[in-house]
Length: 311
Image (cartoon, rainbow, N blue to C red; front, top):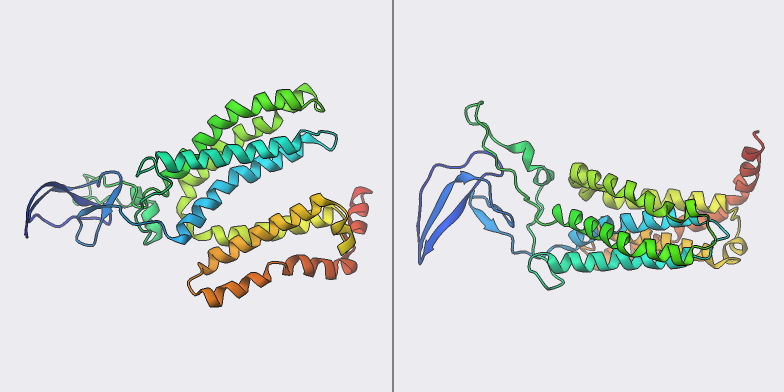
């Protein structure tokens, strides 16, 4: 095979794009940025991303997809109040919006029209921040080689958030106006207003910290799910199994946190060795059981009452 010989590329992410191929002859362009959907290989040639995402990649995308849904549910519950009967319908609508947004995002991603994406393998943290590795051969001129080396894990999250926002603006105001009769006019749309704040925050978080989140999200899930479960059980004055079983809502919250625990454990273990990693899921109920066994020593109801009285 005849290959056009040119000087080697500088920098981690600069590569040569294939310009012409005729049989065994390949002609490559000058060293520069790779087109979208390609990344450099070890020989500094741009190669198309043709691999399937790994399980860990899907778990990361699932985490980023869950963030707006969990925030939707939190603010819906926060602003609905105990007198409102519309919270359940808003929860279902938020789940519908995020599910449809995820499906549309997969359908419009390459390859278009199927619930499947092709991707490039994440090799190191710097793959997420290629803009920081543009070389300057003469310390004056910068060769700009910024591209999505982790295609499409970086940009697909932005596309998903955009569809979530569009669907929310199309569906939620009509639903809230129809069924949120238990709330005042100024309170009906507060959960929607909250989303208009947290979507830009999530976008900036992905833009700046996407690579850090990719490696840290399993531990973030575990820590936050443990903290929020403890806060919820103490705020609800749950001190024994009877207090937990007396309301269905408490069981739903408990099982939701158990699912998050399991999600975090699977993400950390990556289920590389199935027979060794699956027994770790037996640890999922441990935090709740530990809380119930030790609640009688801390008496969260007494602490809450003293805090309310200013002691």
